[in-house]
Image (cartoon, rainbow over all chains, first blue to last red):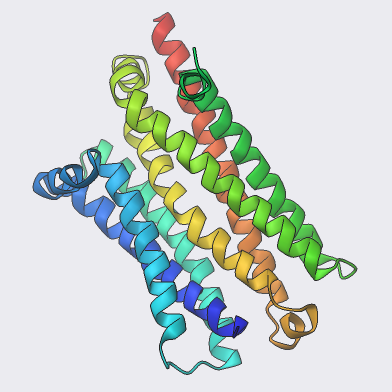
Length: 106
Length: 160
């Protein structure tokens, strides 16, 4: 098993999953048809987001791991740093979004 | 009452959600200490990360079932009609969505622990693994605090 490649594949997949959660969450709050579409899949919008985000993470990790993409040691370090930043940014964006949405700023 | 009915009851689901969440937080804090120190075996780091990841998955399943089955019909109306309706709109909405970051993050940290110590040091990943392990623990703690605020708001709502 190529462990560094597994790690970098997981990092990219985690970043994709975080971006997906942020975008689909904000989108569904601002668009009732999108929220209804999510509800129609698994009975609850949160269940659909959960299942889609996990599937996205798992499939992206497997596809990236099996693909022929090259990575360098330096790229591995940089992407791990970017995953940390994405996590912090995702948390801040969702918190500020729900605050702004509650106070009807958007 | 059979075992499935007991597991699906509201207090047990909340207990499982919280209990597994605490195990997940503790495991990743423990892993953080192991990554900072140099005398720990790779095997102990793999086991710690695996326990933390599995615990967060269990917490997510128990909390998710409670949220979908009971929260919207029983808890949300009490909060919305109480003294702090913003707790649902801001705290609960943020909590339920940032939880979705935890599993991919925890899995990634678990994969890093699969590297032998020498390779982790050669790739200079120890410090980043430490930061990511800390991020998992901090998000877990943040979710715990939010859960406490939500529970306390329901009690106030019921009193008022």
